[in-house]
Amino acid sequence: MILARPWSPWLLLLVLAAAILLASLGTGAVSLSPARVLAALSGGGDALARAVVLELRLPRVLGGFAVGAALALAGLLLQALFRNPLADPYVLGVSGGAAVGALLAMLAASAPWTAPAGALVGACIAGALVFTFGARLGTGALLLAGVIVASGCGAVVTLVLAVADGAQLRSMVFWLAGDLSQLQGRSPWSALLLATIAALAATVAGPPLNALASGELRAQSIGLQLGLWRGLVFVAAALLTAAAVVTAGTIGFVGLMGAHGARWLLGTADHRRLAPATALLGGCLVAAADLLARTAIEPRQLPVGGVLALLGAPLFLLLLRRVSR
Image (cartoon, rainbow, N blue to C red; front, side, top):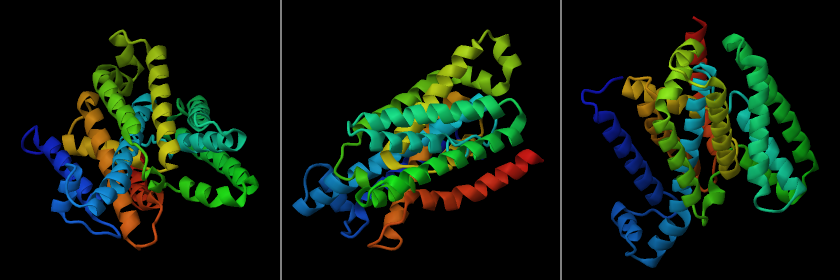
């Protein structure tokens, strides 16, 4: 889809993000009008509105935007690295590896830095396995390697859950399915900063990413150092995936929906434009899915990962059919 004016897609994305933010801040067990939400954001309004908006809902929705942006960018980077439109952290088992690393770190130590470090190591190991065994053998082998790695990670997760105590088990299970509720009352700015830096870096690195996505001959013709750039892209995708998994658990298909949605909306394959659009669209997807997850059967909450899987799985099948043709 190419809108009539070059700024139209960006305006649409910004309006969508603002609408999701306003709806998320005003909707819930305590309904707030847009006027009360805006007053609370400016530091005014009544005490109840300020507490609900600033302490509970704003950290959650901003964290959702950050997680979605990170996962969408990770998917975009993996698609350029593997030159495969079906690459996604969840599909290739990278999210599963990050979850295994985080869970093992949680069981082994109590220091707050161990979970992010474990998630990064797990994501790197899972991604390296997929890259080693499936990246150069076509789409079928890549997906098969991803399925095998994801299955192995799932088996390890099952063993970890089996030895976890009762107090940890429920929170672990809900976290694994994708959970943003733990962001309430926490500062989302570090996650937002990481997502923003990643989007800016991917935008600046647009030409090398374009060359990687075009193939080795194209990359070599412009003098690109393939080994260096592949390593940088791989580590960046693993870092973004690990950060998202530690923050909100395993949320799938955001990389597919964010990257392909941005391509469809902008009508381009240039990563200098795709990177910021993918990050913004990915953030909108997760924030909107979280809004639906916490309001659909209120007062109970659904896992946001399950909501996105209902949307992402059909898209994956459609893309797989297109690629196979």
